[in-house]
Amino acid sequence: MGQLKVEGNLVAGPVSATDTFPAAVFTAPFATAQNPKGFQVATGILTRRLQSPLAFLALPELGGSAAVTRGTFHYMRSDSPVDVRLTTDDGSGGNVVAVVPLQGLSLREYPDNKYLKLIEVMGTGTLEYFVCGQQ
Image (cartoon, rainbow, N blue to C red):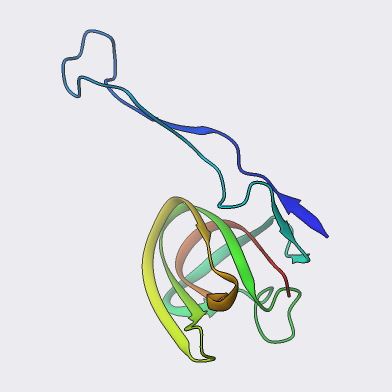
């Protein structure tokens, strides 16, 4: 069994002390719902060069007979704009599919009964990613 711990803060506010808008600084700590979050299986942190501007390609480390079949957390970082298609369980064995644009960082948690089944990516660039879960 492994454990995942997310640490850090999101800090937003004026560029310099002399700026008047926004007037306040906002700080929110980063943490998973359970911090640290335990897991049984994980992909490891992987990097993939994407060359698929017109079609979605599945990341083979998730789903089917891959190392992770039920993801409860994913991290992704892209150096260029890509579209990410996420397939999750609907809680009853069916699928929910969402396509989201990504450029930069994405951290996402999933409930145990609505786990991540599949990640597909369309675009050109470099993608770094990690998925973990109980199966």
